[in-house]
Length: 153
Image (cartoon, rainbow, N blue to C red):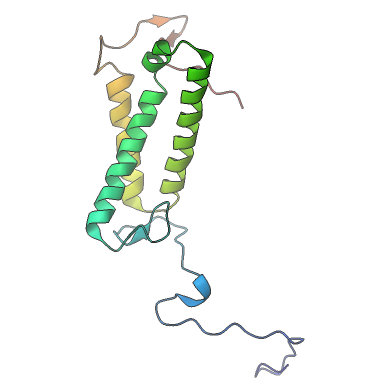
């Protein structure tokens, strides 16, 4: 089959041209570098889209998720959970939420990255640096009581 350049494509046809706006054949442009702006997709197709209010809601959700992750990783919560099944369930919840946060950051939106970092910082101040409760834990054997064991991969 001659595609106008004199090259035989062996029966393969070129895909039809995309309509204006880049919506051809269900394919969209995905940012692979950080960008600034409210027009983005975070976690779900079309959300928050171009609506500024929904973008603000998405940023609040990312902040809260990062904040809650710090609580789920605190020794204070771990001390409240005695049965192994409860501790395992909280661990599974923390890991799943951490993956969701990672996927949100992979939208490559600069605002999402900033609120995720701010949420982690606020959660650290609240649950690990002593803003809520008695203050920072005393250090024993080189590690604070509020710190979790290092992850072993």
